Length: 176
Image (cartoon, one colour):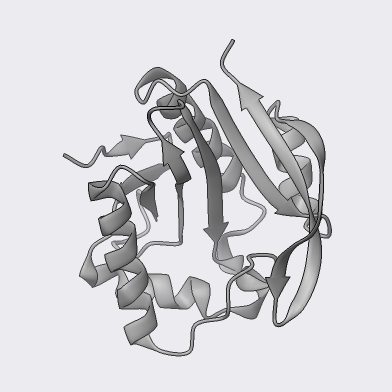
């Protein structure tokens, strides 16, 4: 059963086919995908495929991705957040997230990152949550540091965006 999580202002819920437009709105926006290592979506079919992949990853215990919905803002999602490369055996996962630019600078990302970090440690039994962030992504680098993630190093030419290689920072937060 897919876990539904809540923060003061947000609902984190399973992504369903009806979220295709919201997924497309995020991942078709070049400001969102600029530091994502992911090509910008150009069709609704691609967004629908994202939702299918997120569902498959959850069913196979390889990842879990929530849609982020503002509680008093209607049904449409404003972004997604979750764990990639989830390894229950090794008690680790990597966190990933994005929010549509219309909802930046409202504290939503800190709110949902804190919530799923707590969920990861307390409910999934993770001992390590990692993050890989483009060096140029000042907002994510600052957020993760503020939330207690420690920078472990730099992966050179680790991710490609629009055919260009980028260095990334590697972070971790340990449940010790």
